[in-house]
Amino acid sequence: MATNPGVSFGFASSQVLCSVFSSRLETRAVYLFNVSSRDILEPYQFDRHEYAQDLFGFRPGYNDSLCNRLKEIDASFEPDIIISFTQNRYLEALFTGRVLFWELSPLPRVNSSLSLFMDPFGHQVNSIPNLYKDRIRSLSLSDEQLAGIGNVWHEKIVTPLHCHPLTPEIKEWLSPIQSTKQIALLALQPPDWPTYEAAWRRSEIDQMIMQCTSEMPTDWVLVPIFHPDQSLPEPLCRAIESDFAGIRFPPRDLSSGKSELFLPHVDAVISISSSLSVQGIFHGKKVITLGQSQFSAFTNGSISKLDEISPFPYPTSALMLAFLSNRYSHPLDACLTEPNYVAKAVRTLAGNIEAYFDFSEWSPSRLAPLLGPVKPG
Image (cartoon, rainbow, N blue to C red):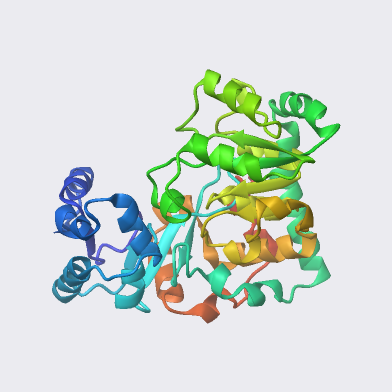
């Protein structure tokens, strides 16, 4: 990360991660603060799922060990800003106005473009999109600006997806299903992950697939797409298809890490907290978030009532893209390479909700580098 040499960094985590972090930053002084895994997990009988549920605020009680350690770190290091990559209600409470939650932004990555969102209120539960849904929906953009968003979206996302070498195979495989049924894409995530199990409930992948399939309306078919880090044995997939009429597993070469390529060709998107649910909004699909995500205020719904959910109209998706490209999302490359980019963003955004809704310097051109490489010249 390119920052001012005068900025001091601290890193608080388990002893193992502190050691790993230290070895990767040999040329830079970093203050390391060990947070004992034993002390933090003991109130939950060392169950990480229960711990993650607590961080989301879905569990009664209070983790005194964690809070006391955070207070000790605050007293000794006196940080101006705290950055967290996971949901944490204790950080929200203890460091109000000084915390920014970071994660990869939910924008499409088909063009290999990565960006970070920066949210001062929450990683998932208390995110700006959830707390300020009505302000996002009521953003005042001109017809020219809305058209500009559409042009950028078509150039950077629609055209590349249409021209992708796997698109003909996907369309050919989906065609027989689409002749009689509507299709819902189930975007899966790896288990043992806070934004999977804590955001919804403890569930194995096959259990989740069967539960979702059992709730599907009869005129729909569920198409699961695995995260790149997961899969199910082929015999198990065939057994599930045999037991449930409303599910089809794609061929192996299409079944993992290909969710974005399927999006233009399905009717609905279902996920726990995957960014694919937000991308479903951009593509004008019906969207259901099973768990608690940073966009749950836009995507709550029930699988059994899929027929009653309306697809997202273009103005809503355009306003969401405008909001994300104003100050909520930041190109990862700029964060890593441009001197003082992160420091400036932090000074502007920490604890300042109005900065996110100040569109005085925004134009649709802000969206382009977040969706794909900028063409030279």
